[in-house]
Length: 440
Image (cartoon, rainbow, N blue to C red; front, side, top):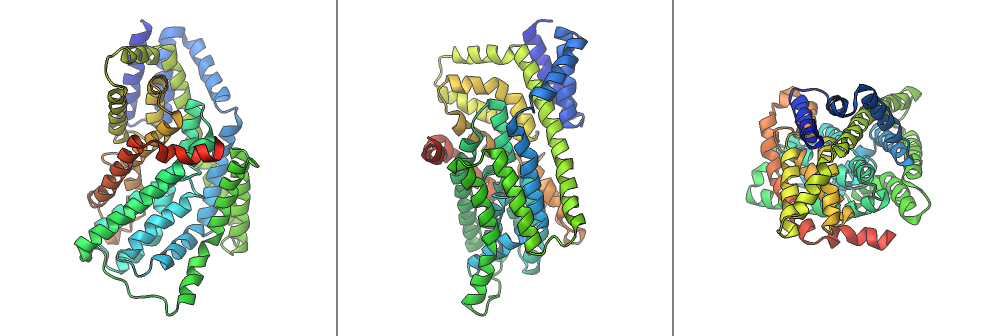
């Protein structure tokens, strides 16, 4: 079998195994082993897998992933999500659709200590949805708003997907973190504008809530509950950009401070609650590492087949504007986002398209933001919208909100994402201004 045919077979096997429902990490490993065995033999295939399992994660950057996961678990168990929601809701009180606005901004704030869009969606689904339901908000609008706002945790640093992109492309984690700040906040403000527009057009979807504060002092007291989140975000991001911490050291410091705040504020009353958060983090880390090792092994096998190199040379030889190639790549990633998880998209596309885009003169940090924005959109679009299914999983049965209701509710926010994506493509400086300012 020639190498190019083996590369095509490798991609086909991966899509087939995932279509059959096999766990994504095992799909990467199995498709890679089959193709590498055909090319190199079984013993060499196992040797390559062993090398990928060790050398792929034997870098300090990988250590930041379990630490950021642990920080997110401590933040969730320590009640920081509730404090962020209470503080932002206090500041947005009086605006039309204030609960939706509070959900958007509090997801953005909590994203600074979480890094997981699915976890953020699940946490705020448990907190915000019952309150919205109590005030007779439209159920589809409420669920769609929460599922969409949960994606902010992917873009706003620290972001798991930014770290994984950095590992695939050998880019600076600090620059990627900085590049996600402005697009993340811009998306949050765009969501708020959409909420205000929808409520103005149809006030029934978000009935006005009664004023819950008798004085401005009470309101600002609740708004001040956000201070622990601000300190944690300041330590983590400030430490990275000041040069005091590497991303791994920042993750360790953030985890420790989050644990201390959770203990001081009384959210962690028993040691068993701390160990439970650690066990949940270990389970999540094991799952992520299996996927990432499988994905990186698969990428190596795909590189051995020379399919990415041949495609790069072929596309570079086409006499078309480089923007046409870029739009074609984005269209493929957008469609893959509807059927695959983000790590799978990165493993399948980045070995092929990343060298091509760099050769065409596109900035790799800018493309990291674009790729992450596409995966955000994919996480709320059918048929495999992970955030939508996470939202469905925390909705009580008595609320009677179906998957179709949630997908219906996310479309206005999907339009917002597409608008922001278009602006990021047309004006790369939106993404690159902050990393260039902070890190040169």
